[in-house]
Image 1 (cartoon, helix red, strand yellow):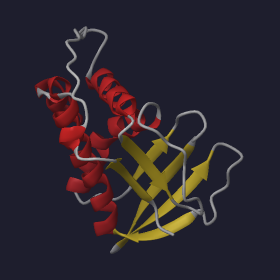
Image 2 (tube, one colour):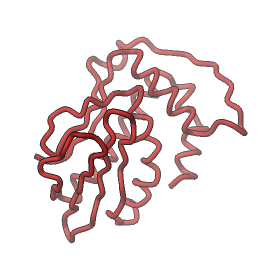
Image 3 (tube, helix red, strand yellow):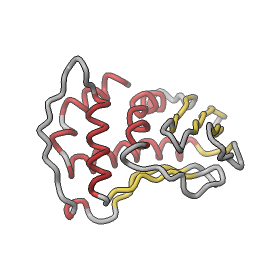
Image 4 (tube, helix red, strand yellow):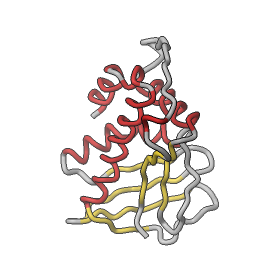
Length: 171
């Protein structure tokens, strides 16, 4: 079983209630992560978007948009920057309570070896998976595209320029 992660919409985006948020962010206290958290909260509240992750012997990691997705999205700029540079050595940390696992990605020629480490009683079986680089690249780029697509459809005022600039600065 390979590792898989995605955002999945239950019905067409145009049928999901759109949210308008006029929130003032404090330049000293807030950055893109604050906006990401708010977008993920909106995704959660719609009950129409699922964040899905599985692998390493488990078909359901019990992740969600409210708690787990923000942590993964905040890691995306660094990961996408590495993938853009052809660097497949990085770590993805599912640090939220309950999930608490880390996946180390190790470049292995035409493939990537994923090593899963659990910080709970759950044990990955197997704890290593070998995947093609194209598949790994697709997972992260698709997650990024869907996050923006759903954000533009549901809360375009939050997806606007400030979040895009934060993503660019982080890469």
